[in-house]
Amino acid sequence: MDERAIAAWVERYVRAWETNDPAAIGNLFAEHALYFPTPDAEPWRDRGGIIAGWLERQDEPGTWVFRYQVLAVAVDLAFVRGWTRYNEPLSDFSNLWVIRFDADGQCVEFTEWWMEHGQRATATT
Image: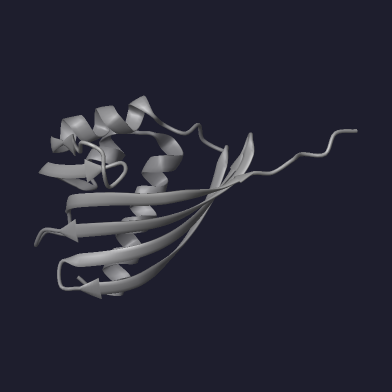
């Protein structure tokens, strides 16, 4: 896969994140994929398990903004840097995604590394 194909996959991931649509989530992953919500966690296993894990901790649409940069692509492996800002409570996260793909461009292994920068104080009037 090349950088353009990775960016297209990430855009589909973001659309699935925005909608929490089970079909859109499932279409990102191969049948027997693994999704590590944190590097040291037990992975969500298989497409159905990934959908269930995602929906269990879903973010509500419109409560966050995400931007990303494809850092590197090496054959079937991609590294994506992301920045997420949540509206309530106002907080920022840095993300690093390590994504492995099959020959059809579906994810077979996804590992999410994230770090919270802390909550920001909101002004009250």
